Amino acid sequence: MLKLGVFAALAMVAGPALAQDAMAPQAAPQGYLAGQPPLDILKILPPPPAPGSPHDIADRTIYATSAAGIDGPRWADAVGQLSVTAPAFQQQLACALGTRLSPQGTPATMALLARAGRDMVGPMNIAKSHYARPRPFTTDKGRACDPDSADGVGAALGFAYPSGHSGIGWLWALVLGDAAPQKAAAVRAFGVATGDLRVACRVHWLSDVAYGRVLATAVYERISATPAFKADLAKAQAELAKAEPLACPAG
View 1: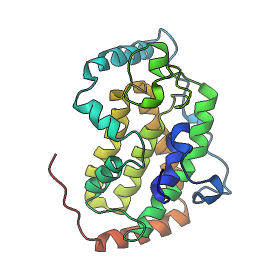
View 2 (view 1 turned 45 degrees about the vertical axis):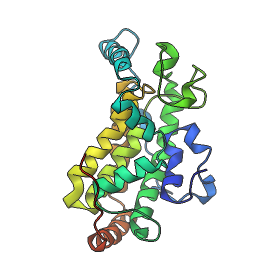
View 3 (view 1 turned 30 degrees about the horizontal axis):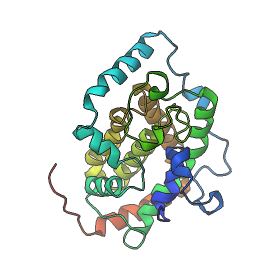
View 4 (view 1 turned 135 degrees about the vertical axis):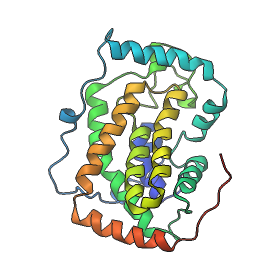
């Protein structure tokens, strides 16, 4: 069972399987864009690559090639990030930031991440439902690292495009890069890796991951201009500046 807090609140952005254990919608934090015109995500995200197009061929080639990594180190890393509530995911994010994240120790930072992520839920779900792109293991067959892929149809995971894991990893990276500029490179590397591991897990096409980042960037650009975000960001910056550094093993 997922713990309540920022990671549980954000679990809903990564897909139906994670949303089942997340906080109830009424208990989730209000986003920065509440009450504002919604993000017109269908004008921002193009349709997934058309069958037989160069990008579709690239997606399928990369998926086929990724079979060589089954049960390898990247596969194991991807298993550790199946949920944004997973200890491995939380630890890797904390190590990139150089600060342990917790409701008690870094409440302002946790609130900043939770509110930012809440704004990604709506547009992500709209895009997934509208484009209804199948997962790669449902069309091109083969193993995926997520147990929810075992049915071969992806019912528990939902649609593929855009990738929620990729989006939340990149959104958090952008937000934390503002909150701790000296750690921006490290948290952005973490954000990129979060999406890349979904390809290694074989639950997403490469273009799902790329446009998950586009979605996250669009959300970030909107929320970062709001007075509420700026106020919360200032609190998080002050909090992280005083936070005790977290030492993590190299590599």
